[in-house]
Image 1 (cartoon, rainbow, N blue to C red):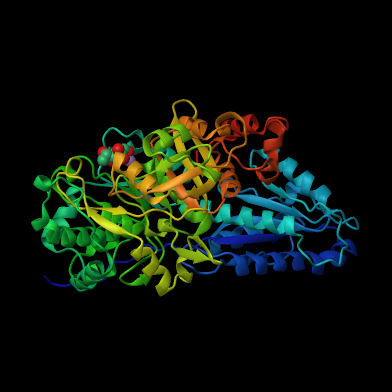
Image 2 (cartoon, helix red, strand yellow):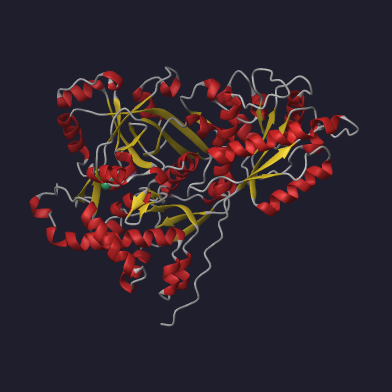
Length: 597
Ligand SMILES: C[C@H](O)[C@@H](O)[C@@H](O)C(=O)CO
Ligand SMILES: [Mn+2]
């Protein structure tokens, strides 16, 4: 077959942050006296963003500062045109002084906006902040307001800590919004076992996230295996790495059901599925050189889901090795960004994983919110009385076979178990994660076609955040969030509990932080209130950042355990009620509607 021209890889330029220095337009003294201070504010924030923030692939964030300070409408228009040319996906306006609100605010309805009004008294920046945000509210373009608590002198060039936090949290969430725009969710297969989240609702992805939905039939995997539509050289490298590094554990199936003779073929097939799954998501120029120009393009997917069950897994090796390796931050080529892939094509859990990933640039766990274990039940079944952080009960997070190896928390972050950014992973981190994991022949009762499932026990005492986007008819998407901690159980207790479900699957014992109110009154209440069978689990307590992102996307939050003073939403939300933040969130999201709706 004659080699085809290399397929053009879709251009996915990273979104940039536009910075708008706003100034009092009065010349003959006022404006001139403020030019340096105003532009210096913009430059300081640009330096902060470039130093602190990265895209998921590790490249630093790029800021675009308007060519001039913005004092009148034409200067605002010129800035908007420059930002359009430069690929700006969110903007931040900064000012130390009074300016003319509706003449200078950013009017773009399709991207996030924030304004930092310097708390100074010589040329009051805060009063512009209030005026401009009033304009945003009246126009239905909600914007975030950032205002330091203590008055600063005009020549004070520091960024107060609380202002710094809000500047960074706004930017992280805004970059997530901008990164999702135009990319796709790739459904590999259809609805898995009637799981509602597997019913891909394109209006959610399109109107709320600005993303498109792509679909392939699972038979595409088998076609590509049969026709050799993968890189044979990389396959050999991947096969060797997988054989050497992925430890096969005990076959828990009854002896008469064990298919030992097929294990070798399963490893080879699962390795090919992993290469193919990645190529389907993000493409692979090597395929064009091999004569597969169309397949080389991929589907521009920022996230995907693999149906697996049933049909495919009834006759073919399951997708657990593929899902595990792709969601992990390293493979045979070394450390790399994770490829977000949802089990059972649960697209809503995939979206939840994607939100977490874009806010943290880290791998995410996909878990079933499998079982609530009361202290009484654990004692009855195992004889062990839960204690310490687990004394109120635990939630067994256990996907039906796969999850990122980063979920072992075997990498140490500042000496503590956790998930590192992929660009910080060491050989030792990778070895520790691999060493903590065993791959077991899949439960043939569930997975008649075989394959392997991933087992490890997550390290305890790790701060984590579980979230989930749910869809409700007439309401739309709604987000629930539970920050908490992982715990460890004595080995025999853990084994007894695991054996009640499946010892081949990954174990993460989760204890949510309780507030004593509503769905966060008890651990049982969290389980009882969870909106679906899956959750997306991130390292760290990122609930506040998720709340900010959801407000940008107009997705209300029906449950969270973030301290009220950490909640950062657009100023206009306060106009929907200052005594009832949860209700105000719902009312604001309903009023403004989806960002791309
Ligand atoms: C093996 C079983 O079908 C599991 O996959 C099932 O319990 C689920 O994970 C449902 O989300
Ligand atoms: Mn599941």
